[in-house]
Image 1: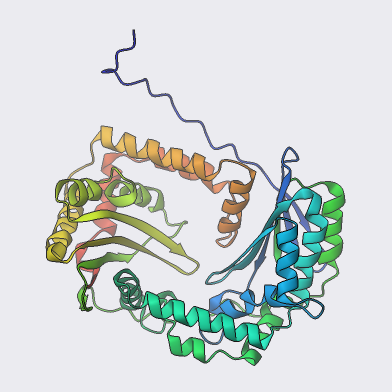
Image 2: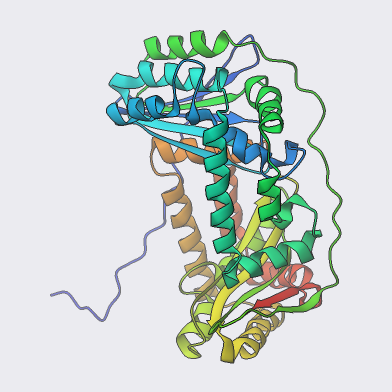
Length: 423
């Protein structure tokens, strides 16, 4: 008979089952990576452009240029494009990053040729219609105005400004006035020089048969691209002095907290241990901060931490919304937990639980052909590929309490913290 007082035995987790993509390079500089699984009835295409915000001369130019791709070509209106996607049951998404922007589309494979041809037309023949651009900018301005009333958004922006300086792109400093200043000429120039004229990277995943792959090579191989010019621009960082900064807002029962500092890049030798520490302190539901500040003290519904890796930097931050009455106590409890982490080695049982959780999350992140294509796209921005996961799993399991104590002492010094309260 089953004894429910005895937990089930723990078995070692497997390694991530990584799929090596097939790579092809076209004569015009376009790179294609194929994650093939012809058991699927669906295909996915991700087109990665070197057309992120850091390449733009002013804020919101890159975002607008990318989002105008589905608003009309020289032969179709935006409405006609939307109707084609709807009729074929296809979904398209657009994302603008700091360095890399992307267009992603998912559809049934039987419509792959039609959808791929339409996407190519949108990239090659975007006409940036003025009326649609005005509507887009008006909507985005209204979204920003609403966000600027929310404490968590205010805290996030203030944290970025204090960490990098008010004019740095990583400060997320777009204003409503910036959106108002966007004009058609600047958007068209950015589209021409960064989306239409630079060779993209294509990721094809799911059902990808040879006839479709030949069609993709034919379509995208016919484009003419200029040679890449110049490196990614560098922006000077003007950080504020570490310490506490408060922003007062009206009629707010809650206060948003941001507590953190510069983080570690993917290639830093202490990175594996640092992300283990991050998970332990605030990276999952059973973390020390959740146990203390949510479960024991009841100051918040949730609190978590993250090491955010950016193309030219990284930052580590603890985030929470707390009852305003307890904001100072919450900050002190966070600092207390950091102090314990810097003074006392983590117990073997807790450490093993965290390692197992992180290993499982990596398996979840790389589960399936489409997930592996997505993670591959993310890693490409840092000059890496999915083999990164093999090394990081190994390095996570290699961490010892003594190693983590040393890393905490090096990288989690409260005297270096920026502490933001907005509420």
